[in-house]
Image (tube, rainbow, N blue to C red; front, side, top):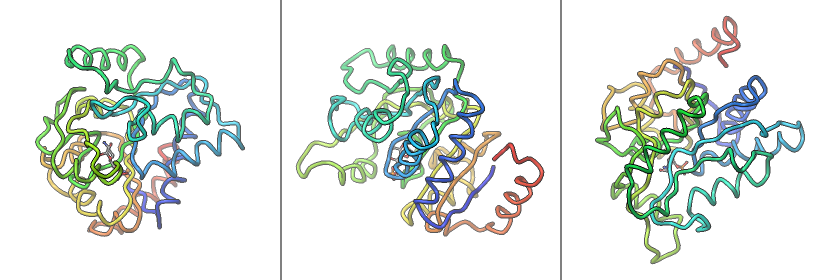
Length: 263
Ligand code: GLP
């Protein structure tokens, strides 16, 4: 586990973009797992800038998004389809046929659909680098507390807390989705490398629990403690409840010195 502490959301996004761009340059056919949420915005903005100013090439990339609301049309402004196209895909040269986002408009045969999403990931050769955000309740993707730590892509009922958090982005009075399709914890743990981004004081408790607490289905991000190559990039506020700052800083310094490729 590596922890990179940044002063603010802007610099957090830039650091994440540096890592993603390095991975893309090393492997132009990278299979990249993507997340949505406000925390990822500075990452995508910086990747778009790198594509424009530094010719960062997305043409060989294969992408898999983590999750999608159930019941929203793809062109709804709160759908994750819309988010990804608006903030990344339409600005870079990723091939449309290489983009995979769970289909939130399906109305039945959920298990069959979710198995086919898993199969598409396997057919592509697995995910090389998975980007994650984290929910206030410690969820990754939409793997709410009590999700099985071995879970695969599936239909998931959202908690009231998550629905209330999401409500802020919807129009007043508009129905907020109660369900989503999400990669499972087991799916996420199979990615070769994981990069989790967290910003703001509302994430401080879940970050401390995920990194320093016990591995528990009550905080599904804590399952990442079982992952062999996970990097957390957090800003000061999200890292405020961590206890071992000095140790993380030394790990980072010596990793940069001894195995710079890991960064
Ligand atoms: C939703 C997504 C998560 C994401 C989280 C954080 O719950 N399903 O994948 O990590 O939002 O969003 P934000 O960055 O806006 O706090």
